[in-house]
Length: 192
Image (cartoon, rainbow, N blue to C red; front, side, top):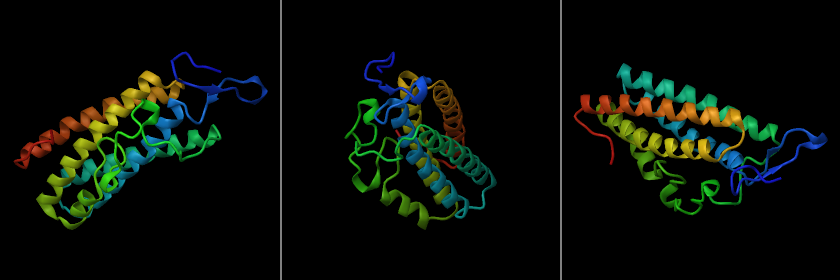
């Protein structure tokens, strides 16, 4: 069955129920890719929590880790519910017609994701230096996440998933404002 958006494919559920997303749909692609994207944000947040004593940064890191871990669980749960694979042979971001744009160079699989080198640097830093690195990486990470979530708002057909994506856009933009303030307080700026 073809969805109401070009290029979005769905399959009929057994017993003639409502359509469930196909493995190559925007709904499934967003769920898979955002689960991976969120996992890195959770990892970065736990790293900085252990590398600084600053309560503002630790509170932000805790909030990001909890929110994104919960959202990741929902995304993976939907894939289970839809009986779809959690991985795809297609490159990340294919559902947004961006497959292959992220080179995977140094481990950065999607827009905004930190490289392996950046993650290693964060693991070695402490105090204010770790805070600035984390905040700059998370700002870029959120910018990439907002781009992906906006893509789901435009392309996904499952209503609850579109609503989650809209919430991600609002939440991450708000956190980007907070991150900008935290960086300024440390004499730094967000990445371009």
